[in-house]
Image (cartoon, rainbow, N blue to C red):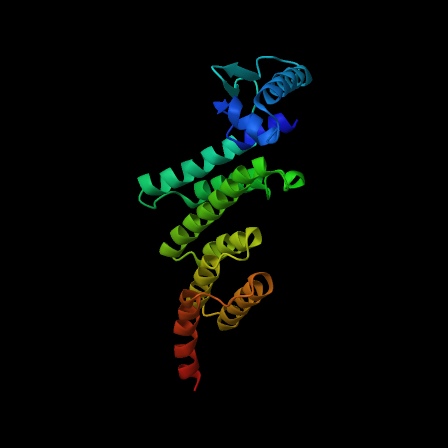
Length: 227
């Protein structure tokens, strides 16, 4: 199962034997690692019940998608499709269509990749890739909805992003802009304070100059107006 998970983590297609043996048997010499790889591949094929699922050719391993559906690959395709549509259609993608695609991406993401294997180095790349792609897609959708002044939808996208990673500052910045448009001053302050608290508790740092500038740029005129 570790071989299967590592293969998926590395993309599931044309993954070299050497990369897999280095990941799974990092301290073994070449001959032992090669024998372990052959034995493990045989056992994996037996477990899956179909030799056609795992293709081994020219020193590379692939999962044949005619036999097996992989959620991480589908997730990547959906994210790419959203970005392509937004670029190709100049931001004129229908709201229902975008909502449907975002819900599909959210359903496929469902949090960190293989959380039970968080300590395994071979799981790191896919975990970080999927998280970054999901955050990028939410940010892209948020900007789209901001441009069409659909502030509530933009707010929802940025809040989702913070549920995934509350240490990324850009969603906080965009949320404050959206709340400004909605004239929700209390929410602007709460968003800034939330950002400050998260960064302080987890990284022992203050918000970036950009975050500070966004907050002060919004709050200062409001303060003068109330005076």
